[in-house]
Image (tube, rainbow, N blue to C red):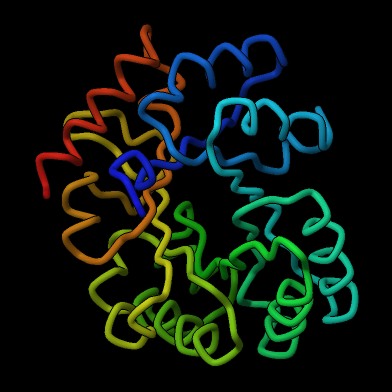
Length: 237
């Protein structure tokens, strides 16, 4: 059964020391149900870093955003499945066949992770999408298009900005996981995230997993910061 702490995925970014990483997990595990490890941490520390999360009794979100030809992505997903992770990301912009290959590879695993399709990175705004990436759509139109394609391929969920929740929710299956990065408690620094929301707003509008980073990892007391966010979420229910 899903508990309130299972709504929080703590992004373990910008932490270069394994002892600091371990201490952060220990300080926050009472309030955090999922820990997200991305490219930096997995490249720096390798698979053993996942054991820190297992020892805390929390779920593992391996955020590697695979994007390659279908066969290569399928083999990468197969390799990641052997690590017994709970969530694994791929880019939806890799196309329908790539997404299908990822979903099919995961389904064969003894401990299949939920494959999440990343739509549009939260650092990409309208100007960047049109002028730098050359996509002649609004961010709303592009995210909805990618969400529809993801829902057709057997993926377990989607990663999208909270600002896109109200648009993608109607085109997704009822039990689809919707993971929302760029979450900031009221009054927090937005940093480099351009499309953000508060935890309560995101959950109210359909988010099932909130990715939160610097408001916790950059706090003077990460354990207290995580507990405060957990309490904010509890007040929603």
